[in-house]
Image (tube, rainbow, N blue to C red):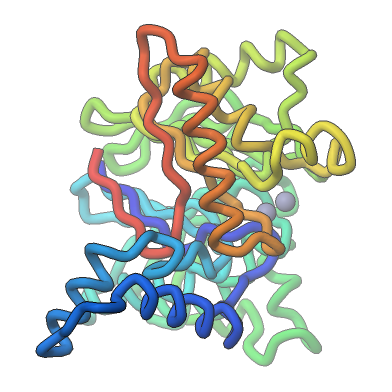
Length: 318
Ligand SMILES: [Zn+2]
Ligand SMILES: [Zn+2]
C-alpha cells in the first residue's frame, strides 16, 4: 500500500511568508558558505541532500487530504481539505481522459476538511464517479451548503461528475475495491470518525480531529485496539501536551505525546504527526517531532516506534 499526503495542515491552509523565505535563503547561504557550485544541478543536489528539512522544505501547506493506493484502479482518499486541488490534478493527469472512480472517506465536515472539493478537478469531469463515504447524516448537506450562493459561483448540482453519498456505520467493516475499511467514532465537536484501512497485508489508520482523554480507560482501550499493529497511524498532533491538557483541553484535538503513548500501547509501527497547528512554523513543528522522538526513545520497550511529521508531497510505501 502507498500513502500520499496532499494536505497536512490543520484548520486553515498556511503559505510561507516572504520573511519565511528570506529566513530559509539566509540559512541556506550560511550552510553553503565556502562551497563553490559549478551548475544549477550541483546547487540543487546540495539543497536536496545537505540542508535540514526546515530549510529545504516546508510542512503543509494545504489542509487535510491523504491518498491511499492499493494497486487497484479506483482511488481512495481521506478528506477533501484544500489538498484536494493538487490531488485532483494528479488524478486527471494520471487518467489522461479515462473516467476515474474516486472513493472519498470523510472524517467530518468541518470546513478545513471539505474546502478543497469546489476546486477538485475530477468533480468537473463527465464520466468520473465520486463516492463520498462517511458516518455523518449531514454529509451531503455540508457539501451542498459550501457550494450554495452567495458563497461559491458553481452550484453542487452543476458539477459534471456522478457524485454519490455512502453512509457508513462506526464499527462496521466493509470492503471497497479490495480495501477493507472500518470507521470509528472520535471525540470532536460535532463528532469525527477515524478509519482503519487494510489491504495486501498492510494497515493504515487515519485518525484526525480527535481528542483523547487518557483518564477514560475504556475510551483509550478502544483506540489502542483500533491502532493495534498498524503499519501507519496518521494522528492529530495539533498541540503540545501542555496545550492539549490545559488551555486547549476540550478543543477536540490531540498532541504528539498522546500519539506516542497510544501507538506504543498498540504496537503500531509508524506514527505520522498530522493536522499541524496553523500558528506553528517549520522549526516549531520540527521541535514537536523531536520531542515525540525523544519521548519514544526514553520510554521504548522491546518495540521501537518510528515517528515522522507529515508534509505536503510526502509519499510512503508500506
Ligand atoms: Zn480539522
Ligand atoms: Zn474539526
